[in-house]
Length: 106
Image (tube, rainbow, N blue to C red):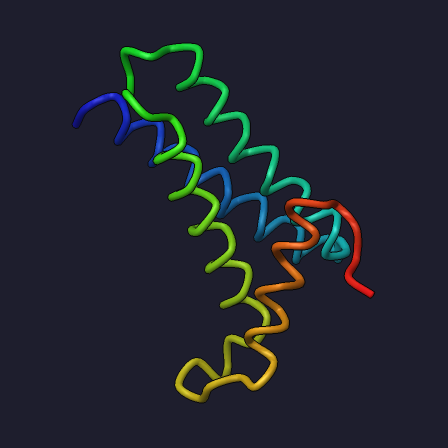
């Protein structure tokens, strides 16, 4: 295993743990997504400061962001994984809005 795989794997476990803890503790979406963002940005900062780990830190942050978003969306309605959720597009937008702008969409 190379360094970047280790960083990615550890960060994904942190994202899993944060998401599970947020759900168990009844955190609202903005608090949960803010924590997920902190994990992604923390890993991104680490690889940006340690360029020997990866040439392009944005690849890691993009992968971790997509992982966090996919996990969060899957947790919204785990019982209907086979059915397409008509609000899936909205909740993708909702996640992006909270993640990037840190406020609820109107």
